[in-house]
Length: 289
Ligand code: AMP
Ligand code: MG
Figure 1 (tube, helix red, strand yellow):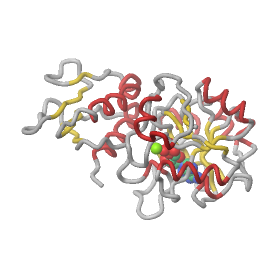
Figure 2 (figure 1 turned 90 degrees about the vertical axis):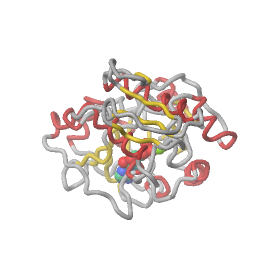
Figure 3 (figure 1 turned 60 degrees about the vertical axis):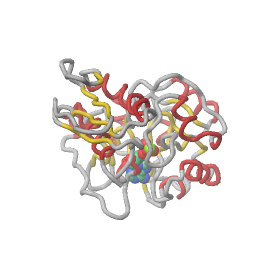
Figure 4 (figure 1 turned 180 degrees about the vertical axis):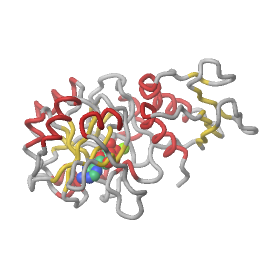
């Protein structure tokens, strides 16, 4: 079933049931090479599925869980290969959403869940977005209203070579470094991908999306300009804070994507760690297949 988390809606299945997990890939039309995040109700439950639990994992869990941080750690055999795309590691997260936590507790199982949309499309931040993308292919949607964070979790690998930021999100690299010291960023990907979000084109509307400089305006065709600057001319105004912008981003793109426009132009957001997750999603949305 689909359910809300604080990041985006997830399409969940019992993470210990390989057949149920395969259904997720079918419904999303997601390549089997893309691993899923496993959702737990507590650090204690997460530890049951990790083959190693370094002290840094406990420190991060105490600081950021429940919350939008996924920890990638060596997996135990109780997590089937289908969940991790054959990798020896698993992504674990305790979501900060009462409905997600209640669902995990009621199931009494870890829940594997990617975003509840077709592969490469925009992620859903409302139940209506899930229905629009997946239609009758999803059996049940738990409607918890809009998801408050609005973009996918920060993904951090804690494997032997030291911490690596696999996907930026609203928990910034700087916040992680306060606990861990230096956090590395991955080599650019080619071929096998360590993270689902690392497919080149991902999180995209169907409408052509371009990134523009402040007050640059495309010429020709019908389109919409999106800006975070309160004094931007002829633009749909987004919140000026990264937190507000992330919360509104996908709903804005879903809405513009329904209008049959020739283009959506998004003004580049500021530099700096607080905007890194948003810059990443916008760059992917603008990447052509
Ligand atoms: P999504 O389900 O679309 O939110 O994306 C899942 C994210 O989890 C990907 O971007 C990966 O970074 C990450 N992930 C999940 N499992 C693993 C794993 N075993 N190894 C590396 N990254 C993982
Ligand atoms: Mg996704």
